[in-house]
Image 1: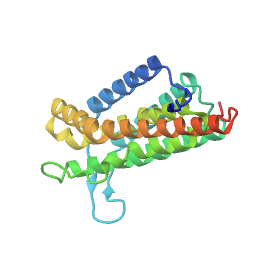
Image 2 (image 1 turned 60 degrees about the horizontal axis):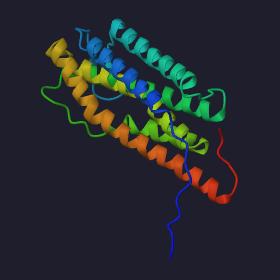
Image 3 (image 1 turned 180 degrees about the vertical axis):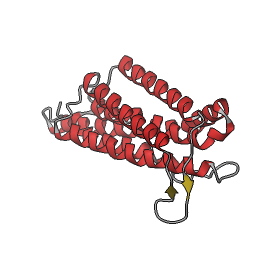
Length: 226
């Protein structure tokens, strides 16, 4: 009679911390959708170059403050709640990933704001679904040597930056529809094109960390970096 080997146990992030993180992300997304749906002056859409011109000062301040706020909240939360030390190589890599993602999404929000004045109807989101899972997968990849829990939390923490800024862009795009319509459309787009891909990326990142822990256990000895 043969028995199937049972994989060794792996680290798991505290479920309460994950749910609290989801709550923080939800609050940030709702706030971003509500603020972005206000009657902001919109930039001009131009052909060629950065495709945006005559950016109003108030809109630039909104994007700058939103970007900094998301980065500060995500960095503090990830370090304080999930224990990621930002001065370690993994921490610096995670910080670089979320800063790059924030800059890209801030420009995307600016571009969507410019489209709001010239596009009639819906916009076709060809690559927009990549904005949230790519940073999460990169964060999971740089953290997987610390185990499944670290890879999972590093990936999900990127959502505190990517999802609110993603929703802010859609709210600005729909802002001509009024506050209620813009906020509702932004949250819907964020759920479909942002939350769903991010959730899959978090599962993949956790799987990477889990497999690393299994391989470390099979090799003998604990080689997982805490």
